[in-house]
Length: 185
Image (tube, rainbow, N blue to C red; front, side, top):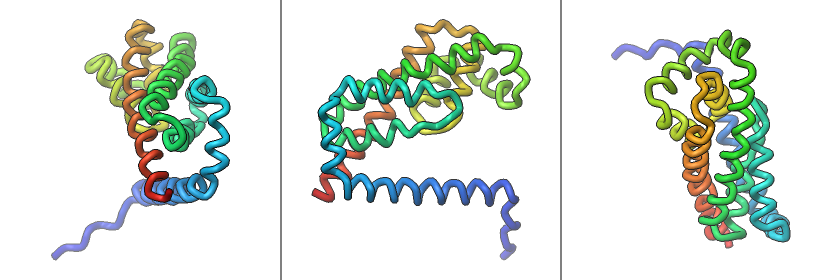
C-alpha cells in the first residue's frame, strides 16, 4: 500500500482552524450550560432584543459576530421555533449591509479574487446560491451579499432568499440549543 502524500500547508492550516472551531463550540456549549441561569435572565429583552441582536450581528461586514450562538442559547429559553423566525428575520435584514457595500463599491469588489467565482455562481444559480450560502454557517456570506449587490440582483429577491436561508439555519441552531439544554437539565 502506498502512503498518502503529506498534507499541503494550506490543508494543515484548514484542519487546525476546523479543530480550533470545534474546541471553541464545545467550550461555548459548556459555558452556556454552566451559565444557563444567566442566559435565562436575557428573557427580559424577549424576542425584540433577539431580533435586534441578530440584525446587528449580521450587519457587521466581514467581521464575524456570533449571532447564532445567542440563537442557540435563546432556543433553550424561549420557543425555539419563534426564536428561529425572529433571529432569522433579523439576521437576513442585517445582511443588507453587505448587499449595499457591493452595490456601492462595485469597482473595488470586482478586483477581489473571490468575486469572480461568486459572480459565476450567482449568475448561474441565482437565488439558490443566496439560499444555500445563507443557510450554511460560513464567513463568506457577506461576500455573497456584496456580489449580489454588484450584480444588482433585485433587493427584494436577495432579501427573500437570504431571510429564508437564515431562518432555516436558525431553526437548526435554536432547536439544537434547546435539545442540548434538555440533556443537561
